[in-house]
Length: 158
Image (cartoon, rainbow, N blue to C red; front, side, top):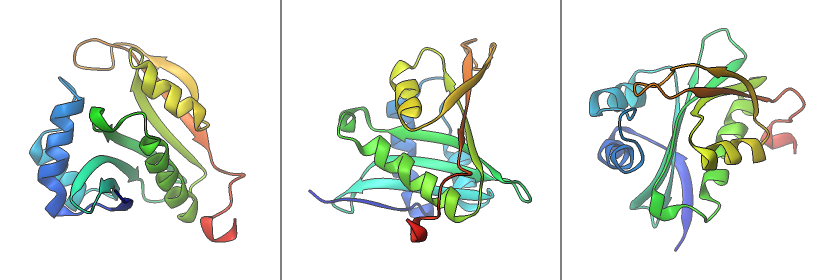
């Protein structure tokens, strides 16, 4: 079954809400938050899908005007689709978007009790910079992670 990456749009809202419910408990986004992120936030949302119908995951990269830093704000992959290298493909797509926009780094926060996500980010060049105490609603700490992009070339120059 063909896998493709594409920019998310408002018609993907139901699929993204379903992924949020499947992946997160307390800290997931609600429908209104996701709608805002898809339509009004300054950033990009990308998804990975199978057969142009079944959304397997999505990611949102927020951009700040005048900043050379982007924030990986949400990253979600259907638990049933894990272990197929799809998260790495989605992360690479966001890295290429960031490089193409001239950003010099990506940042993110991840729960300290999510070793699979931490491994994914580390394998893809992110480094833990500091621990954020009591970051999530349930009191769990987070790692603040950073990926430097300054030595990367835009996708068109590779």
